[in-house]
Image 1: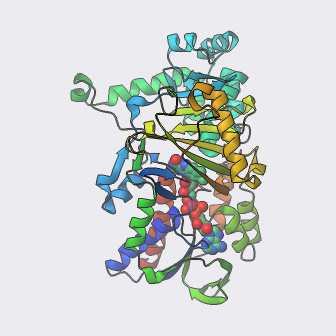
Image 2: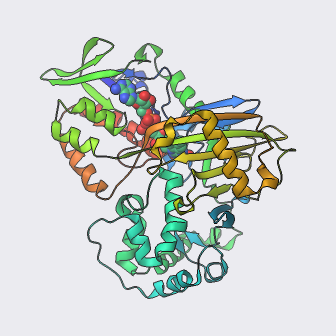
Image 3: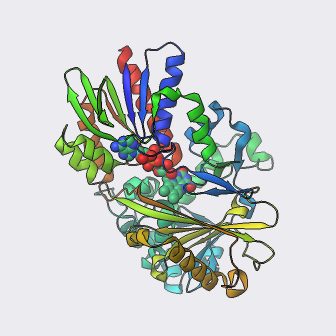
Length: 478
Ligand SMILES: Cc1cc2nc3c(=O)[nH]c(=O)nc-3n(C[C@H](O)[C@H](O)[C@H](O)COP(=O)(O)OP(=O)(O)OC[C@H]3O[C@@H](n4cnc5c(N)ncnc54)[C@H](O)[C@@H]3O)c2cc1C
C-alpha cells in the first residue's frame, strides 16, 4: 500500500511513525509525507536561546491523555519527560488590573469548596449566592447542543462566564465561550447536568466515586505523588519532532512541497505536488480542516463545505527573556489569564521558568505572552516591535511598574505568529464531525487527522494520526 501523508505537523508525523513501524516489521507500507513548510512539526517549534528553552507553539501536553507520553517513550525520550512543577501551581485572573488567584476547589469551572468560594475576590456577592443556590438545580435531560457560555451562565451566572470560562477557554483554544460547543469542549459537565442537575453536586459525586474506587492500600497510605498536570520535554517540544523525523525514512519526506490537488480515480488517489502527479492507494490528510477542504472540494463538495465550516482562530506568542536581577518580584505561580472584558490584547501570560524548572538558565526569567484569539485576528499584521511594546506595557500595568517596569528591557524578545492554527469546536461540532466521517467512510483509502476533529491538544492529534495509519493498514489486511 502506498500512502500519501499530507501535512507534517504532529498528526502527520504520528501517522508516518506508525507506517514506518509497520514497514520495518515487514508490512507493505510505503509512504510519502508532503509538508508545505521548510520544516517539520507544524505548530510544534522550540528554540534554545542563551540556555533558555523558548516554545513558539505548545509548551507541553496534558499528562492524563496517554498518547503523547507513550509516543515519547517509544521514541526513547523517557528521560527527557519533564513534569510541570505543580507545587508552584497557582494561576491568577486579572480583574481590573489586579491579580486574583483561582479559588481552591475549582474543578473544570465548577466551585466545589464552600469557604474558598465564599472568600474569593474573583466573584461578587450575587455570583457567590448564585453558586450556593446552584446546588438546588434539578436534573435536566440533555437536549440540543449549546455554547459553553450558555451552560455556565445557566448554572453560575454571567460573571462566571466573563471571569472564568472565557479566559480559560481563550487560554486553551484561543476561543470564545459564546461560540464553543458545550458538548464538544465540556462533555463531562453536560453529562453531569443530565444526571444531577447541579454541576457542583455532580462534581462532588464524581470526586467521591474516584476516591472510593482507589485501592485500599492507596487510600490508607499517605497520598502517592499525583501525576503532574502537564508534561513537557526538557529540550522543548521540538525534541519530539526531531525524534520522529529521525525514525522515518528521510527519502519519504518532501519539505517545502505543498499538495495542490487531489483526485479520486478508480485506481486510487492522484496527488499533485510541485507540478508532479503520482498515484497512491491511500491518503492521510493531516492538514488544518480549511486546507483539507480546498483539496477535497473537487472530490466531494459537500465534504469540502463541512470541513471549511470548522472555524479556526489565530494566535501569537511572545517570549521575553529577562535578567532576573533587574526584574522585580513576580507573584508566585504559573502566570495569569486575562478575561476579554478587561479589554486587553494579552490573553494569558506564563511564567515559564516557574511552570517547568530548568527552562531558563540561572539568573534569567522567561515570560511568555499569548495573544490573538477569535476577537483579535487583526493583530497578526502588527509589527514585532509594536506587539512587544504593547505586551511590555500591559505587563507593567498588570504586574506593576515595580516588577516589569517600562525601563526593564528584556534581553531577548521573540514573536511567533500562528495564523488559523487552532480549530474551534463551535456549537454543533459533534454532529458536523459525524457528517464529515460519514463522507470520509464513503471514500475508500481516505483518512483525516489533526486538531479539527476529536481534540485540539497534542495527545489527541497523535492519537488520530496513528489511528488513521492503523486503520489503513488494517483495511489492507482485510
Ligand atoms: C500557540 C499555540 C499554543 C498551543 N499550546 C498547546 C499546548 O500547550 N498543549 C497542547 O497539547 N496543544 C497546544 N496547542 C495545540 C496543538 O499544538 C495543535 O493543535 C497541534 O500541534 C496541531 O497539530 P496538527 O498536526 O493537527 O496541525 P499543524 O501543526 O497545523 O500541522 C499541519 C501541517 O500541514 C501543513 N500543510 C497544510 N496544507 C498543506 C498542503 N496543502 N500540503 C502540504 N502540507 C500542508 C502545514 O504547513 C502544517 O505544517 C497549541 C497551539 C498553538 C498554535
